Image 1 (cartoon, helix red, strand yellow):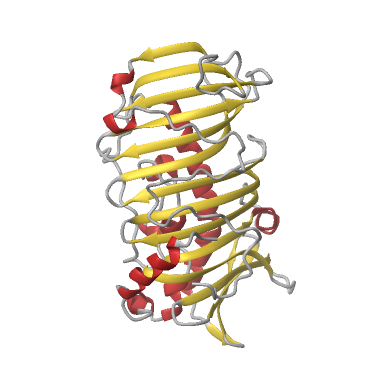
Image 2: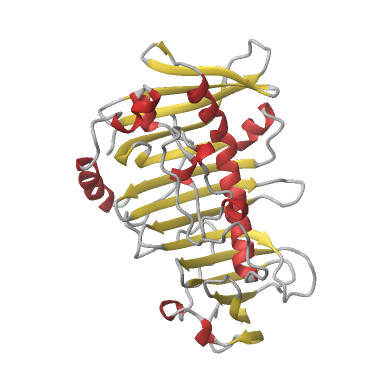
Amino acid sequence: MKSAKLSWILGIVVGVLPACGASSEASGDEYLAGAPEVSALELSVTGDPSTEATATDADAIEATGEVAQAMEETGGTLPAEIAPALSQCREAVRDLNQALRDFMQPIVALVRSTAPTLVGGARIWGPVTRGATDYRFVMRRGAPRHFGWLLEARPAGTSDAYLTVAAGGITVGIAARRGIGTVGLDLDRLGTLDPTLLARGSIWASFAHAQLGSTLAYRLGKFSADPARSAPIDAVVSGVHLKAGANRLRLAYLGNVAETASDAPELVLARLRQLRGVGGRADLRVTGGDVADGRVWVVSECWGPAQKSGYRIVRDCPADGVGGAKCRVVSTVGDRSACPGTLLDAEVPPADPLSAMSDSESPAGDLTPPAAMPDGQPPTDN
């Protein structure tokens, strides 16, 4: 799950953590220091809840829980013109964050509205009924600061056995619900049991939080935010969110590139970098759709603090020569000098959607998503 660097990080961050449960005294249950929370797992470009489905106070396990601060202040009004690459990347982030929120909303409702019972060493919250579905939340504690959990569901009004729809584990580090761990979502099963939810496929994720920021790695298996509007994809996506004010993402999504011949969606592999108060850049590797077989379109776009495009260039390249002399410029708008000074150079993601993209800025080194659905047991390797 982790690089060798993670054990070193954990040794530092555990030393600054208050006694286990100290951050969750308001809830009266120390186990909730290990509960999953949207703000601990979400991706973010600018942190705007309306366009990226990032966490609000309503998503917190506790009213005083940490919710990520937006990278940009919009005063409630979005810019009139947003760089197309930025807009599409935000949609991809929103789809993933909404899937995370859908499984965590029942957890928040359970721990806020019900008291746990103790069954065989596990604490169980619920059930609570949401529409046609009963949910319950199960937590176990292992070694100090080590927690595992399950979210289970069944059709409401039945005595059917509960089925696991999400699971994870954490070694708590810098604060309650922040540390090193894994999360898994079975969206197919969740959607079958809760017909209000649209997303399908699976999401398996690893996360690591440290003093300088967070690192997240997700494996999407046949993931679609809504099969009625988008085909499923298999991909690895990741995020590095630095508290100093930088968000660095590797994304994969289906979307139409404006310069292509029709509205047919292309497969877009994106590298996006956003700097607070400065602007950002996206570099896209585009295949399928209107892009000819054996060809790759490389799109690079930069924007300033107002999120309006200042430079966009589209190149048509051979698949074995991306960025080389054999590329043909399809279109150019603006000038490269509009790119923020530290973002002048392209960082094109790898061609394989399932290949990870290394990030030298990650406080936790390079994370690898879980190879299987987590079992909900407390971790033993941190």
